[in-house]
Length: 399
Image (tube, rainbow, N blue to C red):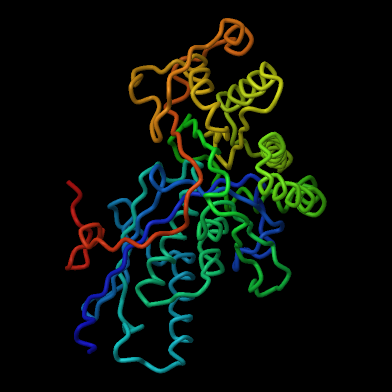
């Protein structure tokens, strides 16, 4: 039977998630344990996903990793932590005995991973990447158990990408991190009208990575300490209630406030960290003018550690707000490619709205808008033609 397992392969896809109550700061950098709990929305994989293929073979001479077609460092400590944990769980599940029908844990592994969105530009690529890595490895080794704790060892926010819909990452109390897990608060079907607009202002890599940035904040920002200990626990409970009640006014206001406070802690870090750009601030001001014009919260922004805006809205507000963005940041050349993802209807803007909301257009500042919605957690890919590795264990050329 072992001969049949000369090459085993598994492919999965995993989603990006966007935190509405932010995670920023670790209390244990090795185990990736957070200083506060967080809450996120998992985005639909039709628009944003990572695809990962993991293969194991007795013929492989070393572990290897390819990211977006280029070979990368498989020895990266976080990649190794995920590999080690999945193999440990597989060994434990087998009771230490080597099942001849099961894949040998001594075989070397080849991993190929691709994103259909810019890597490291503040679009939570590491969360999708590590959730996908762990899902593919678990499938390869036949593991069924809860794996958010393993994904957390790759990237903290990756544990939240192990579930669809609305997800809480619990801070946990234990020093070994066994209670620092992700839990689904509500499935993606819970709030069918909720939509997400990602305003991409930059696809560039950010100047200060999240890992380095958050540890400087932990060491130097008294505001961050107050946030983690006092502000977040209360906000988390409020946000879960807003989600359960599908209360967009409460959800949107709190998402914006929490994003602003997160960026305030970056400013309170010494030396300060700037993830928002002038364009980001233009988008913030635009959202407030738009909501003020309507007299209630129709759109709500949140920014992770990067300049791209994630704007939540209900479906009936999308077309009008997209037109407002188009008028406020007239596209340079890609007028037809300015809105991507889910279809967006057209909207005529009343003159009084234009006068109140679209004040000083900044041409070309927003590269494009991606329209999406909440979606499910990691998915298995059963079609062999979708594997990123060929039967030789090397990346397939993508024509």
